[in-house]
Image (cartoon, rainbow, N blue to C red; front, side, top):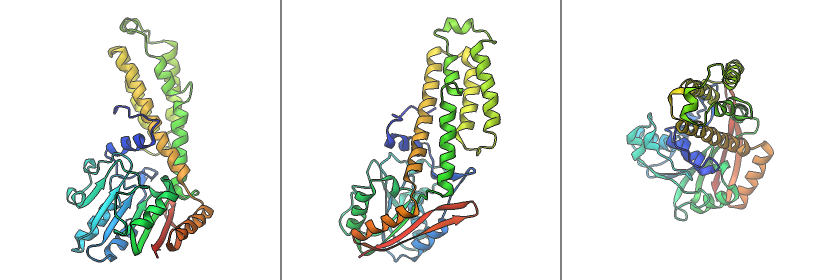
Length: 320
């Protein structure tokens, strides 16, 4: 397990995620949602020397598509990716190093305070990122950095979308498995106070029997969960940890359980943020009005869908 990074901190929880080498954040049935064709259509249509900023870029899922479009079309784009977390795009295994080198990634920087000059950008994009910010402040920043006629294109979580619903299911399972009397709690109770206690531990210990019973129940209960769901990792990790508990130092056992809890808390924070960030149609209507008030005009949005359901709202506007 990775070292705990203050799971109470929203930025730390996302830093933990991106530093783990992830590229996408939103999944259904173990597969990431993608609107690659929408982004590539936009980026391929841009003129040479276009300046693009990707808000809440993460490890560059969208910014790198802009770089790919520029390379494939023989163009040069000035691409900036900004995120408030400690992102590490170069650690993502399937990120093309050449494309990473074409993007100026700026970590530890809130999108409500962009380190960009006034009227310095031609396009502002965001994929499942803008809605996590203080949107009123971010809208002002978008208006500030865009040139007149500059474009805004954003994909935003939809309240009734498949991504939001999948996140709610993942969040519930993560909370359930950490509840009092569930697997993590029972695994913690199996830690003796000293090495001597380990030596004298009985295999038919009441706590161990309770843990194994709960483990069997959890495997059946979560059998249909997506393969990448955290519950499968927790079940596997705790099975191995408990089986080895007589052969490891008590302090190491205690720390392993604590680290696991920190991971699940950070995971839950991210999922809770996703759920809270989702927007209804009424919310989107309000957002378009807010854009208008900041000289981001002709705002419109549509629900993007694929065979799995609604992906999110795709928002368009431009700077007056």
